[in-house]
Image 1 (spheres, rainbow, N blue to C red):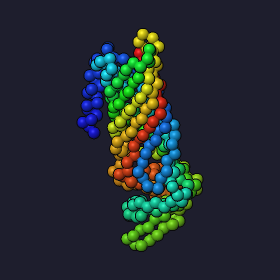
Image 2 (cartoon, rainbow, N blue to C red):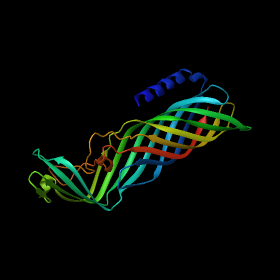
Image 3 (cartoon, rainbow, N blue to C red):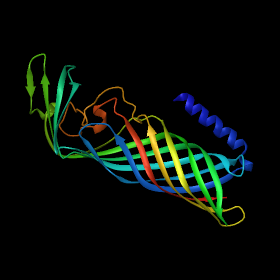
Image 4 (cartoon, rainbow, N blue to C red):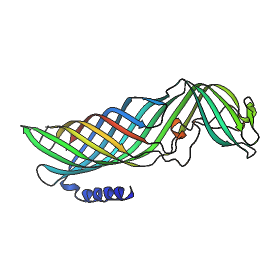
Length: 276
């Protein structure tokens, strides 16, 4: 991963030094932005995502060019537990330092997710004229996808927490002052820890001349992430343990249950840009 990032940045710097001969572009893209997961028992609803971008393309010939730039993207989606009632277990430490099994029964859990990211693209462009003032354009390459913030808003109709101490074979079901019991209308915000990944990127479209050096660019795009954007070193309960109360429980998020979960962005839609 570090080797790929270093190469992308090095090539981008070379292109910047040649920027005087490059064609610059700005644009926006919109479509379906999906944060795919392999976490069992979850369902994600598709939402619109988008990005703004700017960059340039250095032409080697009349048909072939190499492009780079900078993009800011946003993904939004809602994630549900497949079953309306769900039981989760994790290992926790109480206020006295004793280990126990933390059991949570959740009713109608829902998670609103918002992911903001910076993307650095590097792509090859093929361009050919198909009619007067109209060019066919195909772009293929990779992007370094760096999440800036992955925010979650978690809600549930109710959260019922209990504890089992295996050393003494003790179950605790209703002790609110130690964090065990029922909380209705649960609501909390949280954030996933993230890391950068590589994405593949493809665009297929047309450029329409609007002057000697200006053109309107319209295309369809497809982007696919490789590897997981989550950076986790341990499994956690989706809803955290509060040792002093049944309220104010931290929202760790449903993906935190599996530290090896593969969470990756995938998007497709339309691009509209201006070349100058």
